[in-house]
Image (cartoon, rainbow, N blue to C red; front, side, top):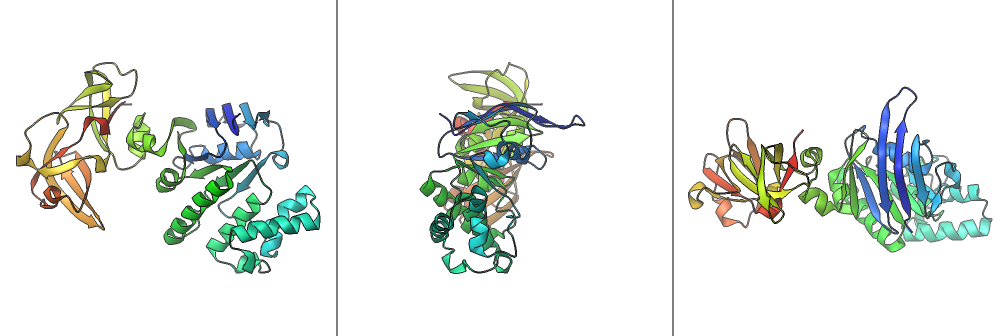
Length: 361
């Protein structure tokens, strides 16, 4: 039995605007799933439909084998955390956390015990009597988490809960969130527009665009093997080169580009001589002086336009021609690449298994 199933779920507003189209998803027990996409893609609408705050236009939402499509939010085994945390400023930390238990009608003794346990787990005990509006962003975020978890939901829904935090605090809370989820074993469904959060925290990522699901996969699959042009352009810093599909065997296909032939893994159903995009992750390429490699498949020649060292990595920009630039990321330990400076002729090589060929348009 899945913790959550979305079967053909869709949302169309009264004015005919399509918000979400034919969303299918199955989430196993204790999974951490991220909805990722640009603003307006339908990810928060989908989360609100799971919570019951938005009605669905079609399809079914099933939680633990029970169809909850018409069940009001307060009777669903879910809890939702919003970006603004929605805390009550006049209440103490303990009262904010216990608010959901008041709604459930627990006795004061049961409520006190549950609130005490969750505050201890999230290191909030010392703040129990403080007012929520007197606390830092990180503390308020933990209170919101505690309030969501204290009611012991089957599924915790998080709508960009880290969006209001600064970068350093965001990284700290990300680590705490992942550890907490593993400790509790609760299914998390997490909405974000930040790729680093989706790829770094989740077990699976759902990439959305214009109300539709573009791809569902592990972070490694989404990053290293995009299935559509949108995912290839949206995720990471892929080099994207236009070409035409060629032949191939053993799971690898050729693509003919103006920079030579490229071989890589192709999405199913690509017919020969159809327009394609060749996608290569910036860190999948090896960089060296042009004189060190003869022309061949998966070799891209150009000149170094820029070079920037960022910690243990060096980011090169390679100009292939007047209109095509290529980002290449290498370790500063790479002696061959680190000899290159702006103006040098260089070649970028990439193994076929790190190249993805997707349909264009």
